[in-house]
Length: 116
Length: 112
Image 1 (tube, each protein chain N blue to C red):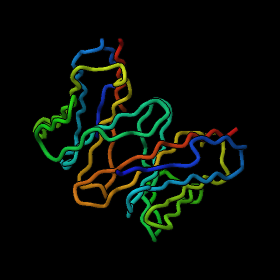
Image 2: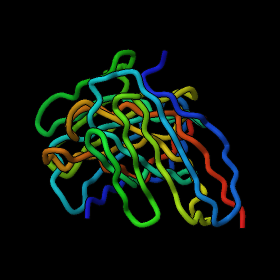
Image 3: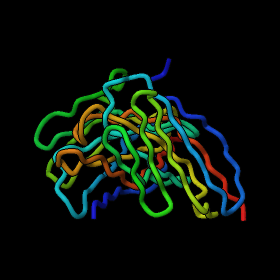
Image 4: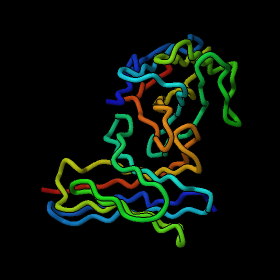
């Protein structure tokens, strides 16, 4: 149980284009999903917290107009990197909370984005 | 001082060795402590989840939490080459709803 998938697993795009990454909880309903970014040899940095049916909460320094998050259902959240630039190249990972007391987050396999 | 400190390694051990991985933290509000294993170019996989102080064992893995010292450990017995990965500690002050604070991760290399 507690499987989280991401699509695509890797994407290469040209500078200035937009990229959408999907995060799905496959066998449970996730009230809350989280989006992280991880640069090489660095830890995960939380970008935003996504709650179903409401606006995402962004961490300080993360541009909400650049990283659009939509949590349309209890099993799907999407992250759209708008007008991507080479400095946006990174490993993007989502996680989902089971929503039960004293439970933790389960992570997707990640999406590697390369902006040329 | 960073909230969570973790030695990045790499930590190299021979197969069969007992491995000790550690994190220290500064926020006394942390109550939930997790260890994740992350293989290269993959998402983190939850290994151990503990609440408050004490020990928890699961197969070859043992997690220890010492809140008085703000110190947590993960022990791996009879280490295998397949254990080679980066191990991330993470902690939070509330349950899964709250944000996790991660360590930078320790790279473990187990040689055959």
